[in-house]
Length: 383
Ligand code: FES
Ligand SMILES: [Fe+2]
Image 1 (spheres, helix red, strand yellow):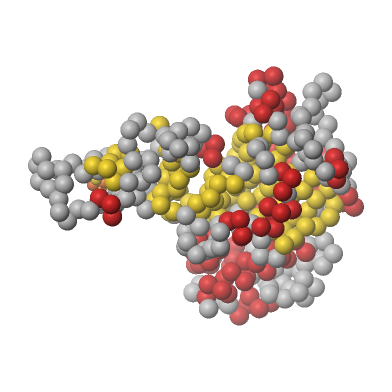
Image 2 (cartoon, rainbow, N blue to C red):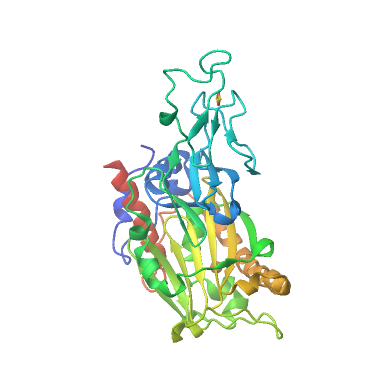
């Protein structure tokens, strides 16, 4: 085991006396590898969006923490996640996004699978001209399906198969935001973008779930949504975040996005931002929501994939394309403002005398809760 379990005792303390995670959680390959199992594969981790395979028979290969995966939207409209590996000799089945015509055909010896993963044909497997063999039981040789769940267009997987059902694992956020539990309409090309940061994925989570940095990092936001307008929201074991009491977008004089109908009054002014553990950052507002899926590319590099969704389907039409583009640009600017701090914290973790840091009990409780969760996952996996 590459990490020091004893050191995690210091993390698993109340906020006032806890330390942050040790440096090796940001700088050591062996700790990163252990975290992959204990944090990502043992829980529900986000790997992408339904809009990655928007239409029936769309397939997209995805590599997630070294696992070759294949997203497929079936003819029933369902998204399924398979291991992108042929059951014959282990060839990668699909190496670029495409529309599957008929079946998924392995490029090596042409074994073919349908979109639900069933092995359908095995040419010459019993000798030339013999497409069957008694020892080849097709029912046993379908694609390996990875346990998955799609919520609000976000595709989650649980590699271990041992996590509680998604609805249970995410029950706190589902309950808290149940008013938003209705269709959210992806804004299309204008509404998706990616940012690459030279930092461990956890620093993006840590930075997202607190509002303490607002006055210094986001002066624009802070001009109308001040530090004192924010409150913390947390559920141990599930999420950390913050909300604002003054959501007051100012995009255009002539046009505005339509709100979700019949929201309770508090949402006229409030908006909330949650880091759902481990790797998805969410925001809800009366007129739109967004999700950021953090895709670790290594211990010190992360791709942030951002998608915006609107309350009203009409907002996704051509009349609103300019407004959507402006809106996405506005969010992009905010998220870009955070890059230098997450990258700076990553660099700071190479300071060998840094001891994990000190949390402000008043301001850093959401960050502490995330550290506490990570430490508890690592301890649970090691014992
Ligand atoms: S490896 Fe796929 S058919 Fe042989
Ligand atoms: Fe920020």
